[in-house]
Each structure stands twice: as structure tokens, then as C-alpha cells.
Length: 313
Image 1 (tube, rainbow, N blue to C red):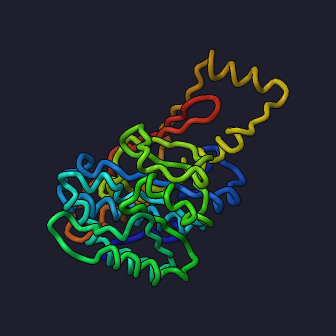
Image 2: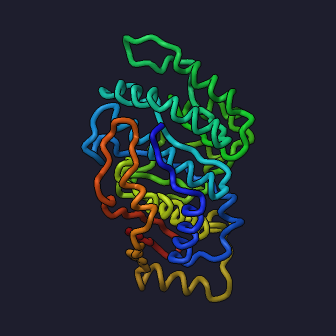
Image 3: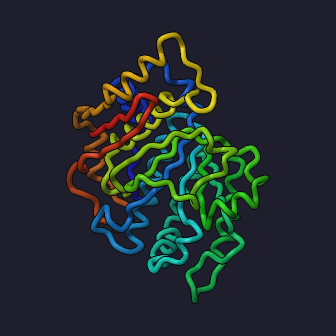
């Protein structure tokens, strides 16, 4: 895998700087308990890449994101890959071919860094496009077994997944970590088929990212900031669902800010070009062309009980 990952020192220093910008203090304990579900999307529209190349690029985005979360000592994540309905799409063969190309990259990364890979969904049904034959599902189950003892991080990938499948196999999810933040790329929608069972998703906040999850358009700093904004979403929304209790005067403040003042935070944090960004220019993922300059602005939106917050960088 020809991929230059940033140093652990760079990730930790940049994340601390991002949290300072976001006004997050004493976040270490919360960070180490934060579980993100990233709903990747935008492979066909976010870059000029086409076919399997675009989906391979999306897989590298995920790998870089996992690496950041691992270095920050977060426990686990969930990533959507193939929903059952995807297998009906005309470009499913592109999705499948991109996934097959990523297999060796993920296997090598998991072995090197002690990451557990878990594949969630119906692997008994053939994953291959119609008219093809193969045992890719068996290969994924084998990779799951080979990494089962790894303890540095757990990445749960939804493959040939649907909520219907999950509810029929609810016992399968016993012991799975609960989701704190769901990140949705490109569309402010939450497809039912890609939802996880309420037992692990009921308290998740929703974060919208306008841009697609294509590695070739995200710098290291932008990915680090993505995680920092997700952490802010978790902290903003903790204990606000079901069991929220209002202190004296708090209801009046919330009503004023949300209903009358139309609370909105819109910030464009300035992050100086650093060695991490310079390194980004040199990243090569297989034969995929990488942007020759720092990627365009990324826009991320979260909400708390007062209203929306939009961050751009």
C-alpha cells in the first residue's frame, strides 16, 4: 500500500489545536469513549475518478480516518460499505471491484497496527455481481478471524447489510459498542436500510458533511478536524435525549436562543498550511491521481439543543 500516513505526533498535536479552536476542554476521557459511524457517500460525484477507482479512493479515505481514530485511542467505529439494495445498482460491479482491491491494503494495515476488522451483514449470500462466482464473503470471514485478537482499535464494516437483517440477528450485536455520532456525507438523509439496531444507535447524534468521502480531496488536517467536530457533536448532545433535566433558568435561555435569537454558529477556522498538508501532496494510492494542491473547503454541520453549528476549513 503506497500510502503516507501522518506521524502520530502530528495527529495528536493537530487534534489538540482543532479542539482548542472548537472550545473543547478536558475532552480526553470523552474522546476515548467516542464511537463514530461514518456513512460514506459521494464516490460517483466528488472526484473525476470513475468506476472502481472512485470506490477504491473512498476505501482509502476510510483507512486514513481509522488511522486517526486509532492514534487518538478511540475504541471503535462503524463504516457503511454495501447495503443490500446496493447489489441492485447498475454500478455494483464497480463497488465490488473497489472492495476487492482494498482487501490487501486493509489486511496489511490491520496486521501492522493491531486493528480488529469485523464485517457485519449477510456474508452467506454471494457478494459477487450477477453472473460471477467466487468466495469473497469467505475471505472476509477469514480476515475477521485473523484479526479477532487485535486490541488497538475495532473497525466494524457493514457489508451486504440491512436493518431488516440486523433485527433478525439482534443477538449478533450483543457486546457491540454504542454509537455516539453518525456522520452522513453529501445527503442530509438517514436511509433506514443503513441504520443500526436501536440498542446501539439510540443515543447517536447526526453530523452532516457536504462533501463526499473521497480520500483524494481530503487533507490530513481536514480529516482530523472531522473527528474533532464529531467529538463536539457528542459532547453537545450528551444527556439531551429522553432524560434531559433543565436547571433553573435554563429553559428560558434555550427558548430565547433557539426560538427567538435563531442560534447559529458559523465558523471558518484558519489552519495554517503545515507539514501534514505538504505531505498530503505526495500521497499516492495505487494508480489513482491525487490533487496537486490542498483540497477545497470542507463544510460540516452539527446541532445541539440550541440550534445548528457550521464549520468550514
